[in-house]
Image (cartoon, rainbow, N blue to C red; front, side, top):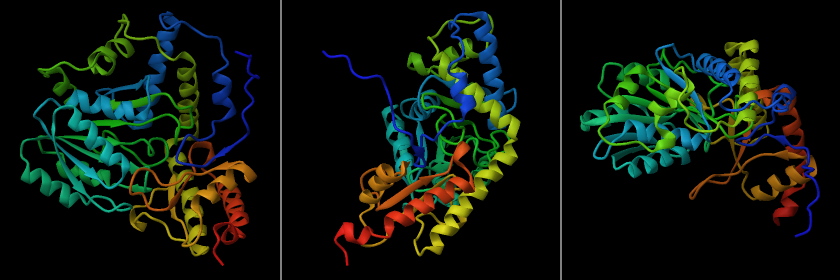
Amino acid sequence: MSIPAPLDPSERLLCGPGPTNVTPAVLEAMQLPMLGHLDPDFHDLILDLVALARHAYRASEAALVLPLQATGTSGMETGLVNLLEPGDVAIVGVSGFFGKRIAEIARLTGAEVVEVEAQLGEHVPNERLLEALDANPRARLLAVVHAETSTGARHPLAELGAAVRDRDVLLMADCVTSLGGVELEFDGWDVDFAYSCTQKCLGAPPGMSPVAVSERAMERVRSRTTPVPFSFDLLRLEDYWIKRPIVYHHTCPILHIYALHAALRGALVEGLEERWARHAEAGAYLQNAIRARGMELLAEPDYQLAPLTAVCVPEGVDGKTVQTRLLREHGIEIGGGLGPGAPPIWRIGLMGDNASIVTADRVLAALDAVLADEPVLSGVG
């Protein structure tokens, strides 16, 4: 085999559904000296990282918070395999690709899954979820997607938490596209298990999944009668990440941990409320500009996410060609529809450091330039 050329990736403005661009501080953190995963100084560092993640979730000391050495889908699976046992009933709100994935993985645990569905772009009304709970009194878990990355819709999670507070059911939330960019109160909203990822609003490279687990959920984990896969076992992970002396579980991705530490520290310096406001301002600016150009958004207006905007591709326009031209001619990545049955959409993400009006203007200018002659490319007109 011939020796390939050294890596030389092109510069990209990553404004799709994730990953997003990272700040220089995050990249610089990944160039710091390596520590071994059993180094006592590293063990102190990961306790700092846990504290930073706890702050991002607004979780108390009573909750178990740690970043899994895996992606957001693994965070999803970790929650399901720890909180469900064969024969349990789980109710899942499904209005997009990732709600459907929760239901799929829940079934793999041997649980009986009740799907409460809504149209793409809508949220599943809390009233229908509560009706499903009433109809299934054995339900052990209620799972929703706080921020549906496939559609740009936000679930009213705070209201759902308040409604199920006194019920004997655990509340699980997909916060992949909300942590660090949308208001989220793990304790205040009575969430029992939340999971996210590092490559969206947190602004770190992909590869880790911060999770938060309530004490009530940990009681469920401790009382299980069936085993949990080793890599996803929350009790074993707690022994490694939290308890001291440390109990070896796995070799951590050291440089990813450095990067996440820098990203979470940056969020702390900026302030969570300020960060949420910045994402909200950038998202609203982009969405108003898209509507002003005569294009429609997929998500319900009252439940539109700020970090992720799903734009309906205008009739007669080749959406994929537009994406390709934005990438090749302007160095800008945006996403398309996700999964079978997805409508023709563009998914535009303004996340992390890219959540700014400056970035939104750059995307809009490039989109205007491409759409100016897109009918010719699509054979229309």
